[in-house]
Each structure stands twice: as structure tokens, then as C-alpha cells.
Image 1 (cartoon, helix red, strand yellow):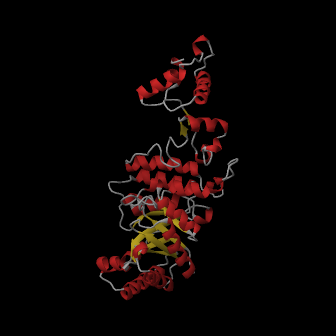
Image 2 (cartoon, helix red, strand yellow; image 1 turned 90 degrees about the vertical axis):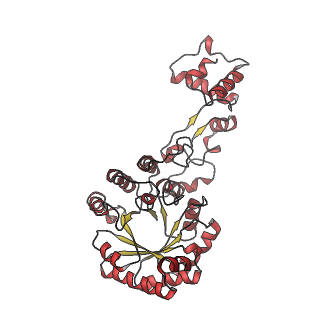
Image 3 (cartoon, helix red, strand yellow; image 1 turned 180 degrees about the vertical axis):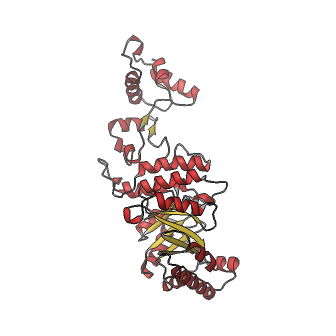
Length: 382
């Protein structure tokens, strides 16, 4: 269901260069997190053969519950012949489907593009590649009959999956649903979706694609990829695992096999390897997504965490943090004082009495510091 492309799409991001050690570490986490497929890179990528040899020897095979190993290559006979010499489970072939990409990049008519796809897929089949996926590049801007014609050419030659690509991230959830539903209805093979994040909708579009019948979606850690990247692995995996948490009440057991806490670790590894900051408010993976300071939220969390949390922090390997500062209310301050005394192993004494000016002192100090107060600072203003 999830095709992780951190090592392919993520590695194509501007200025990102994964070391061999980082690639192996991320692949091990992906396998441990039960991701279905790892797109290991693109044909011609430095160190690809060595990485694939290591992955095949180290990671569990698909029949053992491990991820399928896939590789991307362009729609050229020579490339698929070379790919056939590598030990991969799946080959993803990129095929322009819009008139603009087809004509300006390759100088081909629609009939010529379909003929090339048939030839290339047949060559891949002759090379004994077990599973061939054809990606319809720029499908979101293609004339639908033309994109379907390319897909049918691929299927007629033996492709096992069609991947619909929103190459420049122009789709919305509604237009994603309409596009995916057509391909699911018209084709007798699994449909995948590859959505870019140029307008900030990649994760929403990926989730919508799954809800609309797509069998696979492409994702990457932190959404790393060309330009603004693609759908974020940790976000889509968390939705799949925790989507039944929409109603109030106890957090139910995960409904997918994905290990979301492991993916938080992957995000940290990927951020370090790519030398990109991991935003503290990043959905699922950020350190502050279960932190609260404002009076309304802290008061609600003290009553019932489900009032202001869609799922428990433990479900994604995080912890809850509540602090007091310039935005805090009385209930939060009172609870924080008790917690601070416990953490600092102090007993309440004369110096710990609350008075009418306490809130003013707490808010004043936090405002001057520009942050919530530490335990010592909070007890210091009593």
C-alpha cells in the first residue's frame, strides 16, 4: 500500500546526498516499520548495485514479510535491459503521458509513445523482471483519453501496475478523487498514485487516492523530494494506522501494520542525512505536536487528553508536554507547580504558597524570556 521513495524521490531533492550508511539505516527502519515497498533509487545512481546487494542480503524478502525492492528507470529499452541485471522485485518505468511532456521531452506523437511503452515493457518482461509498474508522468495535466491510452499500451504488453503521477502538484483532493476513480474503474490492475506537494496538498491527495480506490501511494520521509517534495510517509502511515480515532473515547488499536513510532526515528535520521531541519511543529514527527501552553488547551488536556488530541502520543512514539507561560491559566499553573515539586523532589513549604499576584508574575517572566518557564523558574516566582 505504501511505496516509500525516500531513497529515490527524496535523494533527488536539491542539495540532498545520502551517504551509503544513511541509506542502509533508513532501509532497515523502513523494513522494521513494515513498509510495503522501498523504491531504492534510479537506474544509474551512484552506489545502486552495492546498495541493492546489501539490501537483498540483509532485509527480509517479501515472502518473509519484508518490503519489495523496486527501482525507477526511464522508458528506454537499453535502460530496462540494464535494470534486468539487478536483483529487484519490481521495476517502475516512467512514461510521459501529457502532450507537453511527450512532445517537448521526447518529440513523440501519442501513437509513437504508446508504441515505445509497449516495446519497453515487453523488453522488461523478456528480461524476467517479476513485476513491472508504469508511471504516467504528468497525468494530472494530460488529456484523460491520452493518459488512458498510454496505460492500456503498458497493460497490453504485460505491466502489472499503473502509477498516476501529479508531477507538478496541481491536484486537489476532489480532482485527485475524480482522476483516480477513472483509472481504477477503467483498468484491471492495481493503481498507484504519486503526488507532489507544490501547493501543500500531497498528503491530503495521497489519502484521498487511497480512499478513492488506489492500491498504492508514493511517500517519503518528511515528504522529501523534488521541489516541495511528495506526500509524507509518517503522515500517511499515521492516518492509515490511526484513522479510526476520529471519534471521542479511548484510542483504538492500530488498524494497519505500520509501525509509526519507528517512522518518527526514520524522520530524524532522514532530516540529519538530508541536512534539513525537522520542524518542531511537524505533523506526527515534530517534538512539539503534543506540547501545550495555552490555558484553554492545558485545562482541557488535564480533564481528558482526547479533547485536544486526535490520538495518544504513545501511538506515534511521542510524549505529552505541558508547560506554563504567558498564555497559561490558573488550572495549568496549579497543576504545573505540583508536577514541578515532584520532579525536583521538593516538598511544599512556605515558599510554595500561591498568592493573588502569581499569574501576573508567571506571565510577566515568561513574556520577558519569550518562552515557557522551567520548573525552577516557576517555583522561583511563588
